[in-house]
Image 1 (cartoon, rainbow, N blue to C red):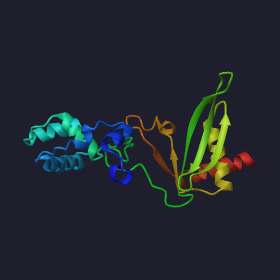
Image 2 (spheres, one colour):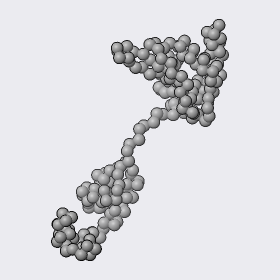
Image 3 (cartoon, rainbow, N blue to C red):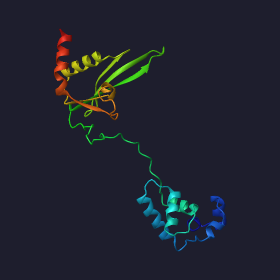
Image 4 (tube, one colour):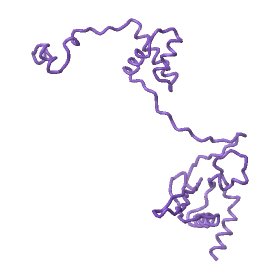
Length: 209
C-alpha cells in the first residue's frame, strides 16, 4: 500500500488503524509446527467427532507437549470443525435379524399411513388419516374426523384400491397390531396386500351395495 500510493508507513498505519509494530514484527513459526499441524489434521480425520480439546489429549498421549490454546489456534487456522451430529435412524431389523423396512422401488409398490391428532380453536380434538405413496411421495388421501375407527380405515383404503390401484405392500402403524405383537420391539410392520385383499374387496362391495 505504501509503494502503490507513495505514502509513509506512519500515515498508512494511521488510516488503517493498525499499530506500526504489526508491520515490523516478523512472525515466529516454531520448527515443530508443520509436524504438529499434520498430526492434528490426521487425528481430526480419524476421529471426526472430536473437537480440539480431545485432539489435544490425543496429542499428549503421542508425546506432544502442547496446551489446548495452541491447538485451538492451529485448529481454527486450518478451518477444522466438528460436523453437526446426524439424527439417529430407527432400526431396520428385529432381534432375530428379519427386516421390517422395505425401500419402495416404483409407484404403488409401498403405501404407508399414519394418524395425526390436532385440536380446533375451541379445544376439541380431531384426527387425520394420512395415506401416501412412498415412492412418488404423493398424498393419496387425508381423511379428517373427530374419531377414526377401523371401519373408517377399511373404507378409505377400499376406495383407494378401486380408484388408484392396489399396492404390493402397506406400511401400517405399530398400534394397529399392538395386541398381536405384545412383547416384540416397536417398529413399522409390513402387511402384504395379497393376504388382506379379499377382506377389503368384500368390505368395499358390501358398502357399495
